[in-house]
Amino acid sequence: MPWESKAKALVQAWFGGNECGNGIADVLYGDVNPSAKLPITFPRRLQDNPSYLNFRSERGRVLYGEDIYVGYRYFEKSDVAPGFSFGHGLSYTTFSRSDLRIETVSEQSKYAESGEPVTASVTVSNTGSVAGAEVVQLWIVPPKTDVGRPVRELKAFQKVFLQPGETKTVQLVVEKKLATSWWDEEREQWISEKGKYQVLVTGTGAEELLGEFEVGKTRFWLGL
Image (cartoon, rainbow, N blue to C red; front, side):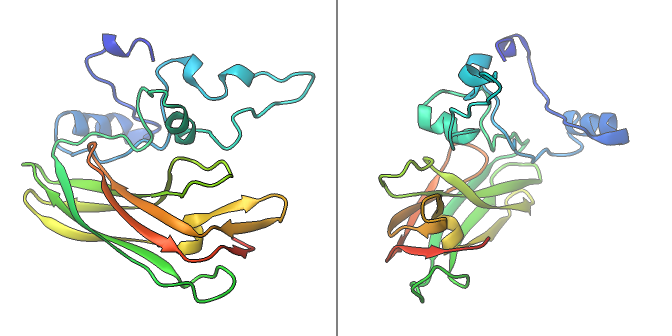
């Protein structure tokens, strides 16, 4: 959006139905505190889009040159600064996050199975003067491998409503196999590779909390 600097404010309202106008007015006049987060990334320029160079087909074939690096995956891998990032959103209040704790269990089987949760607990506080909701996001950063992996992937999120000055503990839970696996086309199986995985907990603002857990051995699994 090269015209962004010419606007004093931007509102992405999507499709709000019959009450869209009233809803926007409630937010703009402060009757409702916004808490939504972008589900996509907005590039600064059309040329920054990952599919820009191969958008059209060639001889009837569509070429997906961006591979797995679409959306936020592309922007984080290429260090291209987006206009508005995936997960971006404003609020009339401020939040803080602290005391990240990671709990998990050791692998119980030769194959990756359900029942091996990774639990992230974090303290969230409303540090402003307006009641509002915060969306706590859990990202997983994989270890370095020979396979191309995203820089990080969103694996869980939870919204929590807080009065001014209120503090709550939020838990985000994801199965270890879902947090760590990638699809191997040659084996036609999911692979959960051994190694240390970083956990990033984010939300409104640039603050990030960092933790980690370990997968003791490489395992395979099928299904969803």
